[in-house]
Amino acid sequence: REEGGGDDEKVDNLTIKKASEPAAKQFDLNICQSVDELKSLGADELKRILLSMGLKCGGTIDQRAERLFSLKGLRRDEYPSKVRGKNFIP
Image (cartoon, rainbow, N blue to C red; front, side, top):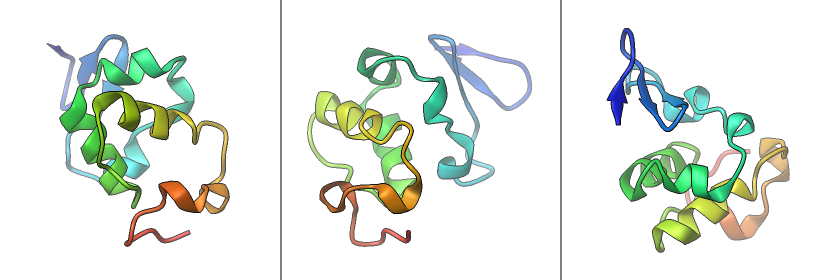
């Protein structure tokens, strides 16, 4: 990981905003090109992103990355019920 300018952090060309705002509003899934790119964020960061979006966050790093990547291009109300957590709000 390398620290970027300001409050942002860059990980393998992905910009992660610091926790000043909810991650769901900050994380742009559309910039991710692969599951491996998401995996490079690490298990804890994937869990934080999934939780902030109201999605299930358990499983291995592979499962978390695949779950998140499967939502690419979908509107929030199109997310399948199998990925929605207890606190999901469409």
